[in-house]
Length: 66
Image 1 (cartoon, rainbow, N blue to C red):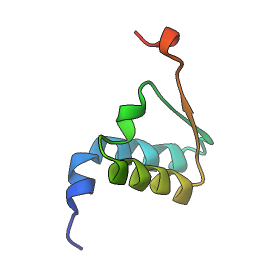
Image 2 (image 1 turned 60 degrees about the vertical axis):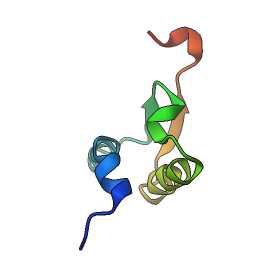
Image 3 (image 1 turned 120 degrees about the vertical axis):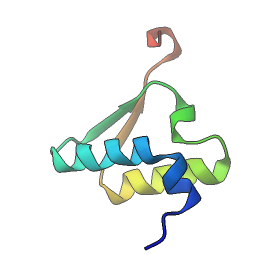
């Protein structure tokens, strides 16, 4: 199967999603919304990947980010 541009660009995020699912994690926490993508299409694809892995998403509030 050919790796898509999205999968190449977001390999780190996709690896973290796989690891979270494998380890039984249910809450996936990110520091910045931009971790999901820079375009609408990338963000939607990332949200779909999280949903397929049955993961809930939390984004740190601005004041909690370093």
